[in-house]
Length: 255
Ligand code: PEP
Image 1 (spheres, rainbow, N blue to C red):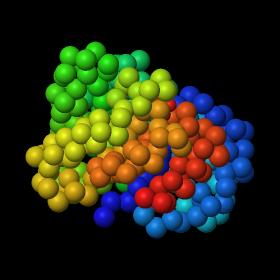
Image 2 (cartoon, rainbow, N blue to C red; image 1 turned 90 degrees about the vertical axis):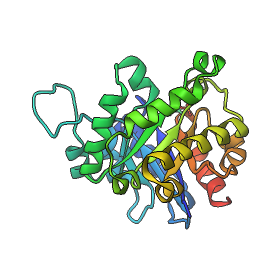
Image 3 (spheres, rainbow, N blue to C red; image 1 turned 135 degrees about the vertical axis):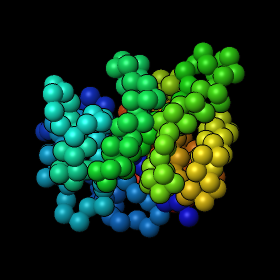
């Protein structure tokens, strides 16, 4: 049985003070261990230490990052490695987000190297895939997502593939207020699971969590999470406020 993962992608929002406030204000119920539900937030790098120290002791909310370099260390000015994130205690890292693909030139080959590096350092990659609006209009969305999935996961062992999380994020739904319909989400999630089965076998595909991302919020989370192949959400805007994040966790607990 796949547990639901509610992961907040804070993007370039929430400095250390705001991050500490978030944890102070976050309802205790959202921080409790809930069977079948995992919650995580991914603040900017500089806010990670604040997140770790402000998180209440015993809180079940996990902490992740939004990017890594694929090397351990060296002459890569401005970069951070998963070795460093591991030292901090990060559980997750978001990789291949469409904003990284669009603004920072990341392609499947780079993302694949990062996925392998995160796994080698014991950090769970949340690997993002998703089509832009034109690709959907041209009916190319399945091809695009197939290529991204195969490219990002190329060369992984089945054991490693069993540890990853995939996030389907239709780019036209990110930060736009427009959400994929539950049917559109389910259709693509089932497709991704089939692709994972083709690459790594049905057992791995049955266990891998596939999150939906794109304007998920308390008002639409229930119908999305009810879909059989939707195993949680990667949530931007609605994860920034402790109340709506807590609500998303509560909705997940009812599934
Ligand atoms: C995201 O950036 O991963 C995302 C899904 O953003 P939003 O929820 O704001 O659409």
